[in-house]
Amino acid sequence: MTDQEILSGLAEIIEEIAGTPADEVTPEANFVEDLDIDSLSMVEIAVAAQDKFGVEIPDEQLKDLKTVQDVVNFVSKNS
Amino acid sequence: MIGTKILGFGGYQPDKVLTNDDLAKIVDTNDEWIRTRVGIQSRRIARDDETVADMAEAAGAKALAASGLEPSEVDLVVVATCSPEIPLPNVAATVAYRLGIPAPGAYDLNAACAGFCYALGAASDSVRAGSARNVLVIGAEKMSSWIDWTDRSTCIIFADGAGAAVVGATGPDEPSGIGPVVWGSAGDQAHKITITGRTGALTQDGQAVFRWATTAMAPVALEACRRAGVTPAEISAFVPHQANLRIIEAIAKRLGIPRERVADDIIHSGNTSSASIPLALSRMAEQGRLQPGTPALLIAFGAGLSYASQVITVP
Image (spheres, rainbow over the protein chains, first blue to last red):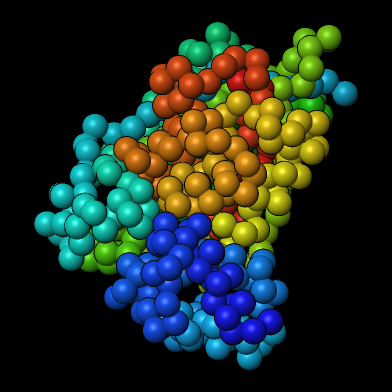
């Protein structure tokens, strides 16, 4: 899976869960500051990402993933 | 083997309404934050002198009246509670006495927020086994006395109240109205929701509990449907423990149950632990959202961690 594929998959998940238009989900976007996504939505995104990419993102790691690119990197590294 | 059914149910809530704006005066929070995180707009809080037994008695009396039974026809009283004022005596015997039920079996059951579905399962099995003709099941909680009112992550969620149901046997040709209970626990996660010490306050790892509830509970509910012989599409009312509106919506979505069939009593009642399911059933009945004779899916989950689920026929 390329980073671009992970990014577009992640954008679909975020649109589904948080209602954020997929085109606003850019690599540098910060979940809290730019996308207004709270900690519970982050858990939902992590669970959906696990279903989609087969990569588990535990709560301990989740809190360190601040931007969209952080999640892309995590999935890329662990898939 | 004989079948069982719910003969009647009822709920009781304290008079005092605590709104999000009221809470914003006590802790650093606000209405919008609480609504978006947990979906609660207001909750009911018991008076200082109002006990778990007082609330249990009030709910039990309503359920008993709805059932049409005389107190003497009840052989067992089970009170699900995790917030009694004192370790003993139990709540059940006192409540049974106050309701005029003559010397029934009476015990309290602690499965925290999962308590009502555990008690309903135990009650149904007692009737099936011939240990009781009819059982009064009550979930009653005074969570407000086990909350740190300076902890904004918990004091916005929990509330007080009681709900009850009377369980009895079905007639000879009548299909069973309480499906097999699917119950279980995850003691490896016991530390995720705790009250430590006799004067302690509830703490929880909200994020971990949220992840567990939104992923592990839908399969349990599906198993309860399978064992009752119904599909989620046939469920007329989905009544999960009122923990957090976002957990409720996430489980309902996984089950494919449309929003209009899903209980949302948490909005005005908060999380009342073991009382939440019978209170939510009572609310849906008042709103005309329950259709007698149709299957309703219950699932309760909480500290332990523990969970239980069954399908009932709406009385």
